[in-house]
Image (cartoon, rainbow, N blue to C red; front, side, top):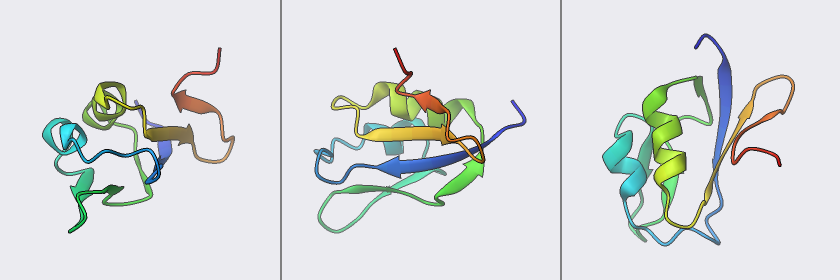
Length: 77
């Protein structure tokens, strides 16, 4: 992919399902309150991280392109 992403988790929306960790264990962790957070706020674009965002049952994960802020997920409509 070649792009760099900013990855954020809306902890007010996160329900701690762990789906993100299942899809991208190198990209997400659950804390002691079972809330997700990215391992690194800025990361290289990767299919597992995108799959984690797409698989989140409450769409708590937002991915934007570094620099431009263009939405990667959820896509702007």
